[in-house]
Length: 535
Image: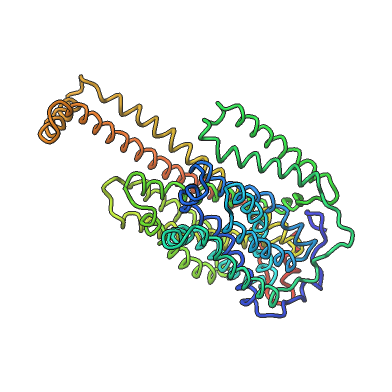
């Protein structure tokens, strides 16, 4: 028995190998995962079009994104339990089928309520695709080649969000927003055929005849994540704790989460196996992926806003400026996949953390007169860090986890990453708005009549405007121009603060790398036995 309360992997586990080529299996599961991850970002640039088409406000249309994230978060941690009960293959087939049908429903929606309902179903179906695909890859590839498997997985989850806004914008501009959902139908059908043909369940996946569902755990988890997600998404608009409903939602989320943890640790058949956090590598890796979720998604959220609000880029231009991040990510994935097993994973992660911090400090030096190259290069560096983070981090987190617990482990791992993403987006948005107000108050203090520099500047602008728009309106226009400049500088300073804060937060990850146990695995028949011995 290992610390998780499960049996060690036996000889039957060691002997099992998939019948088909592992790269065909990887292509099958990653096609579905790529489709699901793409849908988390493809709708972002289409929200104004969706709102106009369905007679909704832009604020109401954001629930198209939120509803997907909520249902996605509820399913994620239970995906391991569901895949063990139904089987990895059958669970993927069911999920892809429902996701494809829900995509058709999204495209055909004639009201915002119908679209949100379809997105809830779509998010629930897609919630299990990422962790189950990850588990299938880890189980199918030999231990000494799992770095390559995670490189394939990492490319999918990194590249898809990058091309999502570009693809969504192009489809919306040239066709209609409905086709951002309809394109999932042929992809979903192809994924179903490939999964049916190439994916199979390992022998240790049990399917009990008498199914016992943990209704209490599922209910507590749904309440906790729903209230937390809504509070994080709408908290800034309501001024956080000054709104009574935000306090209630966060209180309910905290109470439900604590009750959920206590209940799941005490019940015999939990829907989420929290006991696997007794595995130190999994616990450390899950914590770090949550922290990296804050950093990565926080950066992704504010950089397009910076380019559009301050620099004046269009949505499509800002997408092109950010897209080169994928070039760096793909390059580093290839390099990291070759180094896994030869170089200590902790060293690779340390390199990735330092590179990410450097890229964020580069973004912290941007100004209003920069060119596109000043944005592209930090993004390439930022993307280059991903391969040295995601591939070794996932490999290290799952390294000492028995195969039969892979589904549960990857489900929790992806859940914490998504929660970190939600917290990161809310955090940087709040800091951005509050920082802008703070910097503006500081700069306004210098705009007074006793300041010679201010008087000279005001006189020069007023004189210039008087020649073009008349002496009567020139003083008011000059004040408006100065305030607009001040507001731009305050906003710029707040963005810079956010980028540098995320850079410092990246460096905070370094000490936690020492908590990993670097267990060496042997190729061949003793691969699983060597991991079992580590427990």
